[in-house]
Image 1: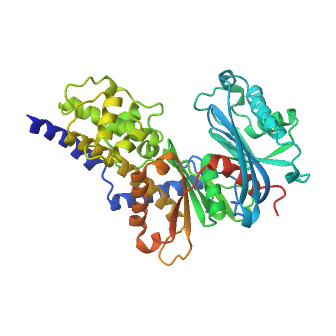
Image 2 (image 1 turned 30 degrees about the horizontal axis):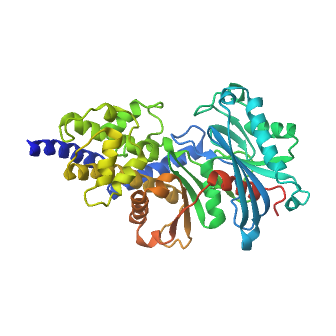
Length: 463
């Protein structure tokens, strides 16, 4: 009887292993498909599943920037105001301070004037608290604005809001220029501050990476969600209108989360998760690789095992049926469990899914499910990065240039086995020689520090 139960469970896991398989040949196809979608998106607006948004950032910081710069990071129910003192190549970031402010709920569905007025008043208070600041030397203050909502950008410091996401519903701001709204609100508060750049967190991660290492050409977010930005030759962007920037470069925000292709290894669990999601058929790549979904995929696999056999004992399946009841930090804890009897796995199963009294063999099986799902995620993320590297002609045989990849996000930072798998997969796909020129660096706070650094690189006073 026990053997039969275990055989059923093993069959589910074996099928999962087969459906999630990411041999190098398949990952090469994923990288090629990513590159093809990138080219299509650069040719014309709407030409691809991935938007390939022109960021209008044509200069990345290189460490020589000097002066006092600000950042405003608005992406959820809280926003941050930052102040960064930069002192050139030798001293770098000499001072960095920030303040976090909660947005009152009624302002999240009020008017644009009220919301931006509230934000501007917080900026005004922050500036007032610093007193007479000698570091400005009579110059106007400059700010980088990280705005993590869909915008149609028209220049480095203007962009119209396409729609709100998350819990925001400030209807009269839709279709308006969010920089103009902020600029007007700050003027009303008597703050003399110029918005030097409008960016998103991924472009900010690339900038923060570039500031620390001038060879950085790709920025990636691997956290709750996922995205990538990279430095493209402006002459390779057919849809770019007007004269090319003096630098000859342009940062592209890929929005790669919406990538999909027939070569992606998609399981029945992914299909069901997608169908039941708020955005069916969209963000397919993100649903395979990002931290929001990995725990949920594992939960769905465990539920199927519980439905088909009694390996978990006589268990009340209410918790097992609850969507997003198992989070990625939970599967990370189980995956990294090194106790002899896998007691952390036992604790997570009992605590989150009400599965108690499991055998050691059953707990090992749960760890294997975590491993299969996470390895697929890390290997696909690596394939996406390889697609970008190949698109810009980096890390090819004989290419002596160093290529830096800046990565931010909790999945990469805190999930050790994910990070190790991503790094080893990059080496596997690029080959030994080419991979030696590629470095992957944890780069934190693109949305804050990165925005201030882009304001510095695009300062009206920049030499």
